[in-house]
View: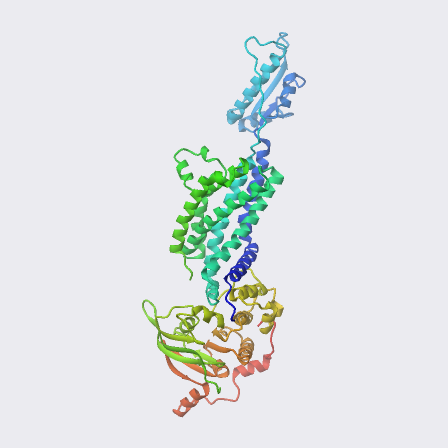
Length: 364
Length: 256
């Protein structure tokens, strides 16, 4: 009894208990790991192929000719063979097939040797346009094979750059969203239910301090979210070639950003737990906070793609800056100091949110 | 009870809420190593009084000393020497009993062996069970086990036997008497007068925030009889609960 009370021990005991509890809570695991992973898997596989134009070869078309051979070599073009005319017609109308090509030997004259008829569809004009330029290019190459250019010769080369894959955009966004949902939903539910079921009241009958309760919960949630983040990053890296420029250093920088983001988002969670009147009002209030950020913070699409009136809203949200900083760190190899602008805005959000949280948070 | 060393002393305790006064100037003492009962109807102010002594609630006025510490200045010191069982308190979700014990030992800052604590209340077989999965009697026994973690000088039990069947209730009485025999003072609230009569060394009757009687159960009964009170029905040497226990057995049951 005489030895002084140890706040650290109490905090760690709470962190351990809370961590165990989170690991056994299905909703926490689903929101933090399963959802982001599903999105990453979907976009990871989607992103692999890039743009494909489905080009069907008409029945009765000549197959042994340089045009078809060349088209088969072009990665953008996906050749579809052996379809009957009825299938081709409905395919074109629905846009399942982007175009149909029919190559015939020229029987009337000697030049040109072949006639290529291409039919596009208004159901898929954008793909049609791509195909048009592919065909123009192809025809030019084929026709001018043995001809010396009279005006200028085009010499093309490609700089070997880093490949920016869909995963490089999607993964940081999903990571940010995972942190947002575990921060807001998790914190809100835990503190609300601990208060409601008098768990906190029982804690208050022990010598534990309020700070220990908040820190213990915080440590557990950050620990859990970081495990999730590492898991997501590793899956992304090893299965979908997510770019980590400086390897482990990049991962550590991302984790530091994750902690900052999570602390801000947990602030929202404290606010929600304070203003929620009942357990059933927590999800709607949390959704008001998370959904706009999910959609507008560049989780799936770049903010630049949004209409200009929407962009200022996007640029006001904290998740936007977390996503932005994550992408810069992961893909461009930026250090934390390079993303200080983003970090500063997150800190400002943090100060604002915790100022509100202190006002509305309830212990009992 | 030869010793009459006051370990808790409450003087002129008042608790006012916005619109009503829950406790209006009550005074009493709890002696060291006794089982002290606070009796009275719902809403009489029993729980409020307990929670103020437990430092969980602010008082409006009055003075409370617990083992030499004042609730105003030394709330944290008091928390370290008392054990508290709350009415209807919950426990951290998704944890089993051993893990909850570890949590509480961290919160109290003491080293205990969770299994030994569970053995004290005969819950060693439920070590891996979740609190939610326990029966009513098991829940109460677990709650009492959490109050013993810091080897407290005083434990407070708020209606520990409400909702239990007769066997579970008797088991809990035995447990409470054991705890007292090991040197701990017990303060208990209850609605059951037979329980208070069996268990308590002294009882205080609380009504509308005031203590209307305080004495040993024997003296209170004798006083009533001396005032000329008679039961309308003559009391037999056994009652229906004795019949129930006699028929169904008194032993511990798996589920109580």
